[in-house]
Image (cartoon, rainbow, N blue to C red; front, side, top):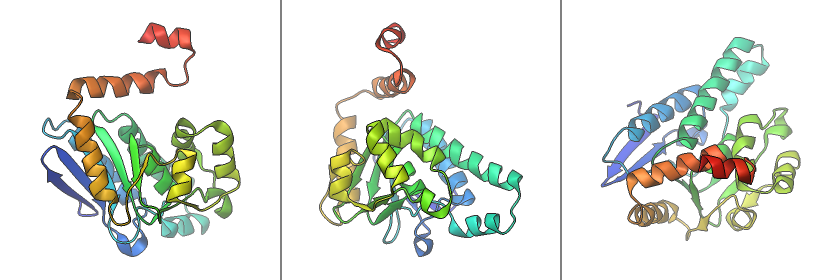
Length: 231
């Protein structure tokens, strides 16, 4: 396992920690590749019931790798940009379709792609001082991939405001808007995320949980008649 993502197993829980704290755990191509591999491994491990995502150091994830963006701005090829985007697309797809329970434990900043990573999980636990913001339009980018998860979590008018008029949200405001499912005490997001995962897994069989997640992914956005037919 690439040490850019630390893997720690505690009984049925797998904690995956982004370990580039000096750069606020950016979603670099290398990070996306390593995290995708770790998630794919967890998906086929019968001993793992839930995956917790968190970041080392002061922040969850500051999103895109600014160094990579600077290289792109200085003349990086369209092919390289597309390949990097595909890596992120694959990461988010694997996370969204994951058969195990997924919980993000957010402390510090979850910015842009970091918001996407958190909101692609089944549940988000954050601390009051956590900070969430979709900053893409500020730096001339489109919140393309992350919009997929934002619009599944919050009403359309809220998503529109967050993406077009970026505002830094603390944990309490993120909870109010629906980005966050639960606030933990300061410094306790990871422990609370583990407790939540254990509680949910104790009440559901692995196969039923996986099938329910798959059904929700399949029927979201369908009309009620079509959804009933699928169910």
